[in-house]
Image (cartoon, rainbow, N blue to C red; front, side, top):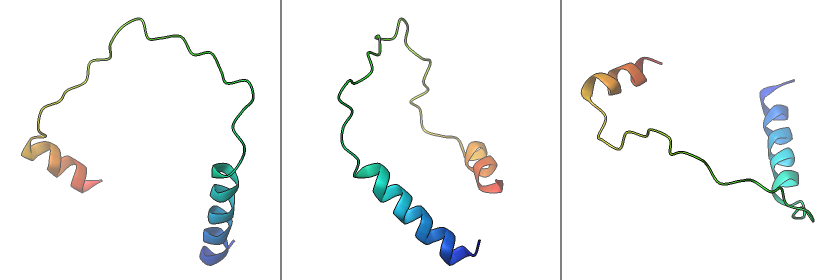
Length: 54
């Protein structure tokens, strides 16, 4: 599949996903029993360097 063809397929696929009707029976998702450990601090210079190398 060529790059242009793949791009067109992705656009069409995403449009179909985003424009589909809402489910009639939404899933029942229970609330979380505990909080996840999330760091809210500013990333360090070393962390930026690791991310840039990827």
